Image (cartoon, rainbow, N blue to C red):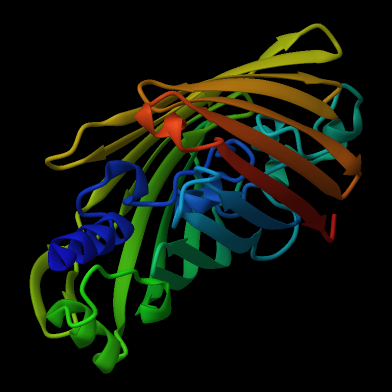
Length: 331
């Protein structure tokens, strides 16, 4: 019994059985698409830094917790012509209703651009913890006067750790538990992600992968036949201007993985003067999400979301909380 429970917990964490936890599932993906798609690196003319903490299923013993920091930037100055992409995220005060953006020389900025980025994430679920550090590279290619195509790749080192202190056993002499405890389970593996993005000042459509190498995960000397499944993420958003002060952005994020049911986020976000925003997401058969945020200063954004669980987990869960702090450095 213990062997089965321990392997299921490990599989849930590494993304083999429980779809929701196969890859990090952010509720505020519009605030930091970079965490899912390396092609979104370099969409602004400043260094874009994001810090986030997510507590999933509050009240559920051993529920997932995720912490990350990401940073990305174009190489060189000038950017993509004051890129309006982040009008969708309500981040860049230069993308506003005034005329500051008209000072940009489109002839100089309609060039191929390169971007780099990096991230570090800690994902905790029960007795398992995964530490992931990654570096990204992206290239942005102007297609038409307003349309751009970007492609990005991420290389990452992953460290998966088992903490026997956090594991509970019905039988102290359980062979599987003892194997994990004595071996000090700690394994490292290399992985990669790839992404594409087509975007303009009003919309984006993106595709990215997760677990590109589909690594085998060996749990100590226990035969588990665990293998990471390749994930596919499809995202899209369009921002409608509703007068001089208001905007409305419908968006979606679709997650697909072989032999598992697909998951989709259906999102609508409204913003006022690009300084305040409020939105809702529906994740069918999983959660209803409310999120809000504000531009604290011209260089700082702060967002918060709450997921009300609609699945049977809500009997033991108080929902999920997520905070995203965005720093726009060197504008």
